Picture 1 (cartoon, rainbow, N blue to C red):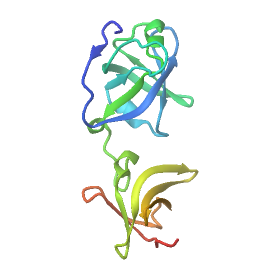
Picture 2 (cartoon, one colour; picture 1 turned 45 degrees about the horizontal axis):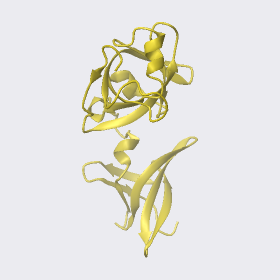
Picture 3 (cartoon, rainbow, N blue to C red; picture 1 turned 120 degrees about the horizontal axis):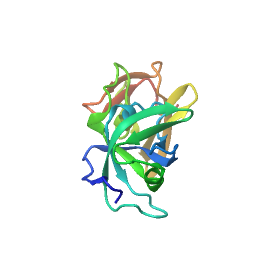
Length: 187
């Protein structure tokens, strides 16, 4: 365990948001490879939960809590510093660690904005209440996001994609776990 790095339990609503890629500078800063093009959760949360790298040297076992002092954008990544990481050696020891943040720590999304993680698993139905599938993942396809759904046809799992844009998406109901779209099963 790195000196000062506290053992912790992973929050039940933890979401993986990035990975520590390398040390940055000599004062304990480290580079983070975010898993989102808009990594606001990394900036808003002051408690990150780390799992050690699956490959290479493990600096610690289990889950560790990191008290983040500052996180900011830098070029194509994020750089951060923490109270427990005092120098480059400490930052290098975190290389490869997976970063998790409690979903409850994410900033509140604006109206008609959604975190991808909240859409995964929702059922998709059309205006005629025909089931079109369940959201398995989302893809960033240039200017728009695409819902990737899976559904059973007979005994075979199939895939369907629908652009996640206002022209096709009528309503997202997170409470009911449903997305209503203007789309037909044979499109």
